[in-house]
Image (cartoon, rainbow, N blue to C red; front, top):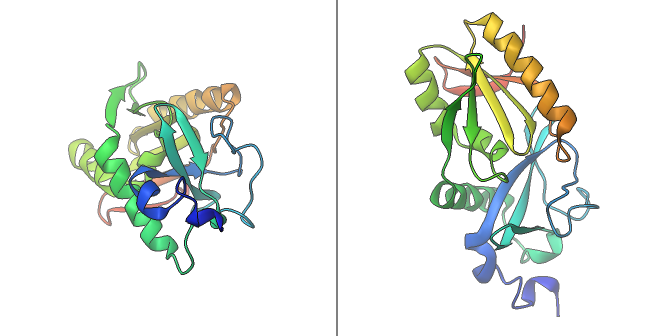
Length: 193
């Protein structure tokens, strides 16, 4: 019996519990099988710059398992998996925007999916509409996403310092690479100074 045929891994059983996680390195300290996996055994989608998307299956409240190729039925389209994972994210995870003491903002969720907010364009569209400016975004860790209006360089600098501290303290580091959500094009791109 192939892995994807096992009751625990049948697509019909897991499809509503699959979520996208943003990564730079293909490791995760919280996932059951997250210590050692690679693009050779897990579906990985290139996201933006050095960022990649992996998929996890939620098993219990705080228990996740990295989705491996062997868990997907033959002919499974990775774009469909991504689409379904994003639908699940929208349905199940509440994202809240919080203020920082220095004028930037943070995306708050459940400690597992904050960086996954990068996948949800509508979050960033709402923020640029409210702030009437491009956004500079940093996802230093799985549980930390910070952003600030591009037109406030002093706030962006403080946000970079905050991101560096979060990156250094996290077991699930992602990146200090800055992203920019362009208000006029409604697009997330690599930040270029």
